[in-house]
Structures are given as C-alpha cells and as structure tokens.
Image 1 (cartoon, protein in one colour):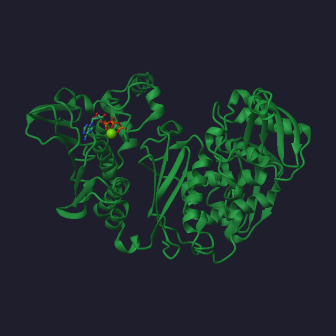
Image 2 (cartoon, helix red, strand yellow):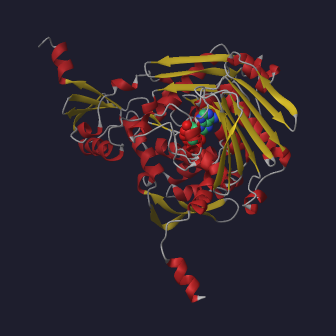
Image 3 (tube, helix red, strand yellow):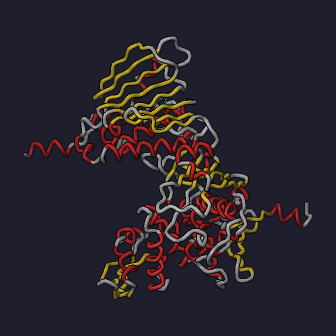
Length: 553
Ligand SMILES: Nc1ncnc2c1ncn2[C@@H]1O[C@H](COP(=O)(O)OP(=O)(O)OP(=O)(O)O)[C@@H](O)[C@H]1O
Ligand SMILES: [Mg+2]
C-alpha cells in the first residue's frame, strides 16, 4: 500500500493518451459536441455545403462531410495532434481570431474518446488520403476522395463507459445534434446544410436568405411573426430577426446570439433582447431572436470558455446596450400595454443615454491614475484634471461599473455582528434559499431561518452601506424574474442589480474626498488599457481640443 502511495505522489507529465482524455472531457461531452466541432472545421475550411449524418443519437455514428479546402496528405496526421492548428501561430493572433477554431484541440479530443476516420483531398492533390485514428494509433493510406473532408466518428466513449452513462436517450441526443446544426445553419444561410438522422433527411437547407433559412430551421409559422432588426455604430453592428410581441415562447430555446459568426451563450444578451419586450409581451413569455453582433475581433476575447460557447466583450455594456437599442427600435411600432418596471433593467438609464462610439472614449488606465478631482457640475458630473486635459466623469455610471467589476471578481464577505434577521415573503425566501452558492460567490453569506426568515451573516465591503432589507429583497425579486437563467448568468445579473443599488445616485452631492476616492477607484478597478464598458463613464477633452476651441491655435 505504501509503495503505491509513494508512486502517486511523484510528479510526472501525464502520458499523452491520458492527458488527451482529460482535456477531451472538457470539449467533447456528447455527440452534439462532435457535430459542433466538425461543422466549425468545415466552415473554417471554406465549405459551401456541409452534410451531417448521425445514427442512434450519434452514439453509433457521427459523420460530417464538406466541400472545403481539404487537408494535404503531409498534414493529415498532424491535424490529430494536440495543439496542432493551421489557424494561428503567435500569441498576437489570439487577440484577433477570425476563425471558429483556434486551439488545435478538437480533432485530438474527438480521437481520444472514439474511433475517427477521415477521408480528405486538397484541391492541389490528384489523390486523397484516408486516416484512421483510434487509441492513440493512426493508419494512413491513399484513398479516392472529392475535394474536401469527410470525418466519421464511431465507437464514441467506448473507452470511457462512465461518460456514456451521462448521455441522455438517443432520441434526446439526436435532438441536441439537430439543435447544434440549426444553430450554425441560421448563422450561415448562404451555406447549404443537410442533416440525416438514422437514414431520414431531417433538415435540408439549400443556400438562402436569413428569412428563408429561418423558415426551414424554425418553421414557417414563426417566420411570419418575425421582424428585422438593424442597428449600427462606428464600431459595432447588430442585425438579425426578432419576433413580434404577438409571438411568445415559454422558454429561451429559440434565442440565438452570434458574435462575428460565432454562436455564443449569454444571459446578459438575453436580458438585452428581452428588456424592450417588457410591457409588450406577457410576463414569463420569451421572444424569439436571431441576433448577430459584428465587432472588431480585437474587441472580443473568444478564448475564455472550454467549448468556445462564451466570449468576453472588451466593452460589455456597449454590446448589451446596442442589442437593447436595436430591439427597441424594431419594436417601436408595437405599443406597450402597461408601464414598464424600469427597475427590472439593471442599467435603467441606458435606454435614454446617447450612444457614444467606443473609440471616442480614449482615456486609458495610466492616464486615469493621475486624475485629480476638481469639482462637481450641477450635482452631477465630476470634473477632473487629467494629464491630457479635462476628464468629465458620470459618477453613477462609473461607480456602478466599478462595483460590478469588484463584485464579479469576488469580494470577501465581512462579518455582520450580530447577524441580521430579515423577514421576506415565502417565495422570496425560497428564491434566495435556492441560490445560496451564488450569494456566497458574491460575498453575501445568507442562510434560511424558517420559511420566511433569512439570516444574513456577512456582506462584501461595497454593499455594506446599502440598507440590507432593500438589497436582499431586490436580489430575491431579481432571481424570481430570472428563474430560467443559469448560475453564471444569475451571478452577473445579481452583481449588476447590487451594483446599481449601491452606486452613487445621480444627483448626489459629493465631497472632494468622495470624488477623489471614486477617481482613484476607477484607476484601481478597471482593467488596464480598457475603458469602461459601453456607455462611457467618462470622457476626456484634451488640452489640444480646448486650445483649438479658444482659438489659441
Ligand atoms: N474539415 C476540414 N477541412 C480542412 N481542414 C481541416 C478540417 N478539419 C480540420 N482541419 C485542419 O486540421 C486542423 C486541426 O483541426 P482541429 O479542429 O483539431 O483544430 P482547430 O480547428 O485548429 O482548433 P479548435 O480546437 O479550436 O477547433 C485545423 O487547424 C485545420 O487545418
Ligand atoms: Mg476545429
């Protein structure tokens, strides 16, 4: 027994086959993950037609064939190695990714948990290549092949029976595969998609417009209820289709978001889409939406999620704001039925604020750290001297963004003693009780204490001054509104709500100390080189600009 333990405690690099299986665990969870990765590869290869075939929910077979560029024989085996990619070479490339793939991991991950056969030919070749990869071994041979690539995956999880157990029924897995195909088919209407499930053609989508493609993927009855959205600023474009308020669904399954052609999941974008429907769509109903956001690739980080399902915007609030604006504009002809509860929206002031293109907000981190507050204008804007000239700060927006950032980063809770007992409605107390972990991540230690009572034991520093009952009630109500959201989204939503409550209010008169503190916090909490998200929290007038206005030059 001792000998075994001694062995275990030695540090060693994992056998690649083992390491591959661990990493693959993140990327390849189920047949639909394979469908996703192979479709992405086909799209990256410039395919104009992609055919997908699955059998027995993908457990027996997943095949994706494309007419893209193909792979030359010398490169075929390399494509299956980890971190083997043709799509980027340098660290700088990582900050401006235009392809769907970039990690060089997908084929290796798929091959680690199945048997993969690829038949491919590049246009420059007269003869194609077949490769069979299984359990770390590969066999290469010549083969007849059209230009393009066809990948067949069988024996999925044969070497990982535990993983097979986590799969749902073949019927459900087939549905998930179809949903994956639809997600890409909607984003690339000009590319033909075909899906066969157990020898039945379940989706045949020839090249088409977005509307026609939507009709094929989601149904004609839905398309008749859709209206276009478009919205454009210098550095951000939003377009797509959204449902009229006459069409509401009980879930968010038919909401699709894409950033530069990459499907993403985002609770906050869902909020941005849904918020303009408030008062137009009954509560609990969700709109249908296919929303494309185009933004410079340098302004999004796509390398933040193991399956590339989420992205991080450099100017997060700007993207949300743009989507909300686009939707609001499209819904304009549909009157609101009831007054809108503006509190529902964490950034209630967005809708009335003018959009200012991001690039006009030029002040970076370093300049900010040398800000000196000089006064407050009309109980509102803070004026500060900065190295370039004059910086004008919106205290509420700036403070809210700082608090949001702090809460999301995770602030330690500070003990409240004695603990605070709080009486809520039963449903509010339940809402909080169901998400104690999310509260904990935000630094709020709270426990149920009977059906209608909660005991609050600690709060993070930024929330200490907010009346506790208001805070917890507001968060409980926020949870009830977002009951469908997942934990990650919920944490952001709650952080936003809390930040909004705790932030300096518009109209608050600030002392010099408070102003300087805020200005210092801007420097401390915003990521270097990145200006605040979205609606600018500050703008800078340079000395040059002032000199020009005073005709000094
Ligand atoms: N269908 C295809 N047609 C042409 N080349 C392909 C195809 N599939 C894969 N390749 C080539 O094989 C390489 C490895 O593919 P793989 O999916 O493993 O990595 P990737 O797409 O570069 O990155 P990611 O892991 O993010 O998907 C690709 O970079 C590409 O050069
Ligand atoms: Mg790939």
